[in-house]
Length: 330
Image 1 (cartoon, rainbow, N blue to C red):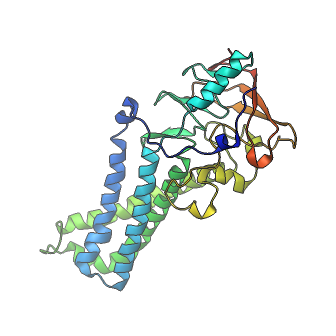
Image 2 (tube, rainbow, N blue to C red):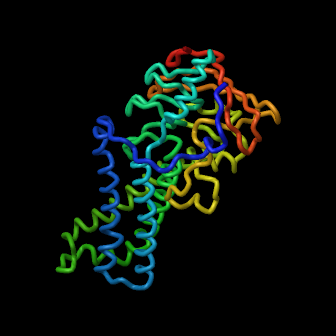
Image 3 (cartoon, helix red, strand yellow):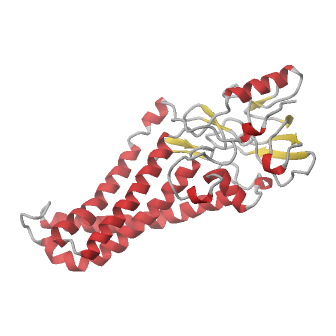
């Protein structure tokens, strides 16, 4: 029987995402993010400073820089954080279980023993813990260890874009005539200044209309302990909103809004509590959904039992009930 200690259910220390050729192929995409930042920085900061930085504009510029810092840090952590793969220690435990004659699911694409809710990412060619999707905007797979930063990136991006729209719309009437004038204090010719201001307002408004529902969609999935790949097929992992969110943002609620790793998410991406848990012998069923980027199947159902307390839920035995597509049973 594969056994694990309580410590095994703790998150790993922060690790940098490894280099991969496919990630480099998507690298030009983040340049659009940099261009959007520049498009807002010119009218909101440079124009306001040149026009005359009164108290209100100074406060607006400070707020913008604070929000922008949260966006950049969240985005950087999403790009650089390893989303997580099944650790070697767990692979050795499963190998020992197989040697004892037990059945353990195997990912056909990677050849690794496959934990519940893990999926093979065809872009990075890795078996990823609690994989959600590969995002070209962050040039990384969104998985167990960097999902917090992806969601914070969406949240702070919406706040920053919304603030920019409101601030620029309020400043535009007073600056309109000044923008048209070609003076030595202007960075660009008058018509270019107007185009930059209008483009910033228009593009930011469109992005808010697109990204706000997208962010709410992902927050809702996290609150229900769902992923883009699985959808609602694993509803038994919904063990309450607070517990679900801790598995993404971490145990300490006061750290949720900060784009820093701290001690990582609650758990280790391998063992998951379930509403099917029983006080003595907990049985959890896992239906692993598939997608175009997951090579580990879409009809795989596994069960495992644990006699540990609910607060220290660790799987101690895994049985393959059925397997298809991307999984093999040794």
